[in-house]
Structures are given as structure tokens and as C-alpha cells.
Image (cartoon, rainbow, N blue to C red):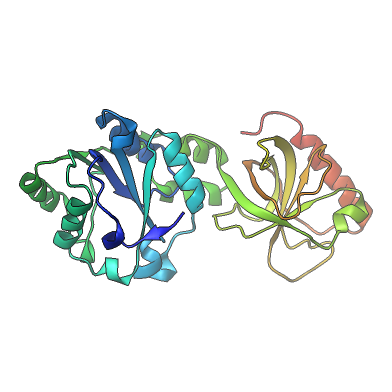
Length: 307
């Protein structure tokens, strides 16, 4: 989907309800904002979302930019599934970073001249130096006669839901908590590429994933589900690590065995998730010992539910 500069967007006088944000993860807190936006529009075609790419911190302070929970395409798909067809991706660059709150809001008014509702989180900030706050927004809304609709944070287990909590849960392998915060199991996405074919030689075929843009769980062996482009889902065992039985160096790689699957997945984009931790990765004394461990992993992956 194309990214636009804010000043490049043409007017959309049909839009009555709007929300803005990064929305990485589209978690339950985001969903409350998005559903409120949809509910305030008498017709879905009158509701809209502006989301920003890349994450503002990638421009403001790159070392502090958080790892993604959703790819850009995943995020847009999840937003549209909530009943909002109009989604525009705005490029967050140095120019937008330096835009004053007044100029930013005037651009929004140009694009959405008949706006009735602007839905935001209670702490939403915007404009240069994050100087635009709720007080500024309320004052501007009086001038152009639209309603500012703040949505209170959604809580889970005594704390507000946010992307930081989800990232921490994934880093700690607490996939149950991540699912409760997201409202769905966590999935990463990658492209299948040829590997060293060791799996084939061992009699256990694996799909090697690359181009993963999202936060991954720590290295280890996981029971999981794999979603293929045709919509089918397969129980699987994933190994994320450096393959210490064969190599001592190199960057961690994802190798996924789809249980019972036969076919060629090279070049296909697949999703891997609904993780359940099985064991740490470790070096085995022989290929035979490794194969036996993998067969035990497969047996455990087929037991119980995946959540």
C-alpha cells in the first residue's frame, strides 16, 4: 500500500469519523479506538484511519525504535477487518516531524472538511515536539465544529494494554498473556527460502524463513501453527537458533517443520505463530540423537492445544 505525505492527500468530504495512530499490533486497546471510530459513522464508508509508517521513533531516535508486532500489510488488514475500509498510510519523515500542531490540524481539516468526530486515546500527542495535546485539540475543534472523542485505556489483569506489555510478554515467552492483550494469537510472517537441506537428509523436511520484520520469540524450539497462502493451517515445530549440532557461529534462523505437509513452499509468504515453548535449543552428540529429539518435539506439538 502506498505511503503518502500528509500534504499529498486529496480532500475526502465524505469522511465523518476519523482516528489517527501508529496502531502497531492492533491490540485490544487499539481495537477500542477503532471500533469507536466505526460506531460514530452512520455508514462504514464515512469512517477512516490514518496510520503512520515507519514508527515515529525510527525517525526521531532510531536506536529506541521498538520491534514491530505487525507488518504494515497485517496492520491494514486487521484494521479493515474491524469494519473501516478507508485506511491511509502517512509517511512519518523529518518533514512531518517538524510540522507544528496547528499546521498538522489545518491539513487534516483540508483533507476532511466535513469531519464530525475525531477519536483519540486520552494521551495522544502530535506535531513538532509532541506539542499538540488534548487542550490544543479541543480548542481547534471548537473552531471547526467537530467533536473530540477520547477513548479510555483498556485494562487487562490490572494494567493498561499497550504494545510495550505485548513485546515484554513475547520476550518472556508468555504467549498466553500476549494473546489476551492482542485479542488473538501472535503470528510472525516470513518468506520460505532454500536452506542447507539438512532436514531432508535427516528425513524431516523444514521450511527456512527469511524477511521476518517483526519481533520474534527468543531462540528455542516451539510448537506452533503455520498459515499458508491458501488459507490452510498446519501444526508445526519451529526451531529458532544457530543449529549448534552443526554450527557454532552465524545468526539465528527459523526452521519450521509442518507436520504431515508435503509440497514445495519456496518463495511463499507464510505466517508462523500461536507459539508454545517446548525446550531450549542445544547441541546433540550426533545427528541420530538430534532426530530423536525432533521426533519427541513433534509428538509433543501434536498434544494439547496450541494456545
